[in-house]
Length: 251
Image (cartoon, rainbow, N blue to C red):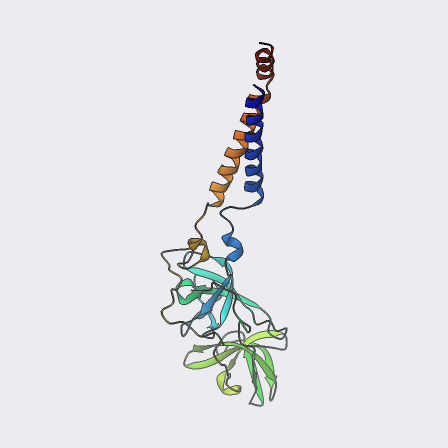
């Protein structure tokens, strides 16, 4: 009887150890730490939109560079444009998933170009919208530097989306020097799988390669293990069982 009881205690100890590991080590969630929250612009004319419905274009993102993913929807990504420069504040917007490429490793710096334009006219109004009739945000003067984010074509005119004097706005192409932007140092791989709209989680995300339990399955596993451990404990140490053990030993 003592040998049987020691065997049950040993089994119970193993189950408790498994339960602790399941609680503190997310079996199916390891991919969350390996996911790379970046998407690359690998096509021409990829727009950054102000709204999830993709009705208003903010500007066209620079090809070969990266945006950081904040959240994911079925067909869109909510992203931030970051270039690690205090003179270029981070801005956010939406892109189409299918127009970006999933990243498996963090990108090399710079993730987005930090390019400055120079005002070439006596004055260059920064507009709230890319329209000649739009409200002026500020007016830049000849020789002033404008921090460039992207461009947009509106009513037959090219506008640059820039930051200057603490404000964002659109400046006409003819009033500033053209942006000189080189491709990102990491070559673009042709025919690389892109986000698939039929697969909301992305076609090449590490989460699909590292198949594992979903968070719900993990919770169910933990609950099952804990209940099993409790059941064995009760079966082993309930007064009725203890009394039976003593009787067996007396015999």
